[in-house]
Image (cartoon, rainbow, N blue to C red; front, side):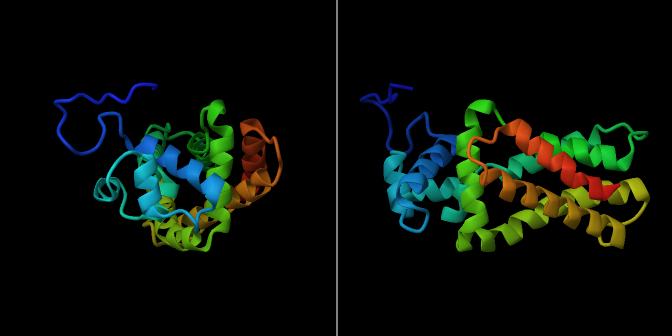
Length: 198
């Protein structure tokens, strides 16, 4: 990580080491130090050693950077749900998926706490969440609908997806407010919340 990978024959553009994850890390660090609103896309690009144009090739806007790789996580959750044995009770399958979706490396606990604090408190990010959470709910509703032989727009699949999202957000609000709370504490809150799905 200490090397830049730059050579005299390199063509202009992004550094070879630039990834979506590295841009997110840089942005979250800036958000933590300066605040979300006070951090510009230009500052993120400069800190990531890329052009503004390159930044927007990776992300459509500043709000999307704060969300990181949420889309990829939804795809992983879909894969997880697709692999659930058919004889697994629906509630158990949803609890397992909720825990799996909200599992991260222990070394990333404070970064994840920062991200969630931002997502739960910054108006611009909450507005963006309407779009992002719709995809998450659609994934959960799709699983429930398949299990019940219904559509994602039917009452139980749609209501279950909304309830599961509400459980996750409520658990996160408590978790970010507890200094030093670890991933096990988050999972405990999620499990307690899912009791309403019984």
